Length: 141
Image (cartoon, rainbow, N blue to C red):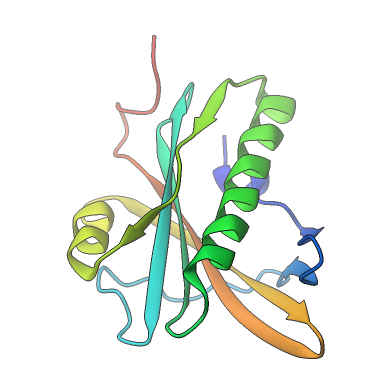
């Protein structure tokens, strides 16, 4: 199972524009949170144990991008349910400090894709990162 395949390709973000996954655009993922970024995390639990982290530029409204992360995480859970018949729960958002990001990312497989949020002619780049635990801790019996 590849969690990356469960990321939504695009969606309308209420009255705030559209969000599109950039085609095969990956970005380097560091165990250090970039100085100009904020991050919000969602725990995926149930038949899969993973996390989705959304990095976005400091200065943007964290409540808006927490909700966007919630939409992405919920769609990942829905897509995994449809594609793999898995039962997934999504946690409420958690704003991450640099220390929390380092603890969450250290020693795990990190994969990410970039989204573009388009609203009123402005394009905002966001990074969605999926964190898989080490093999052997991937679900519940």
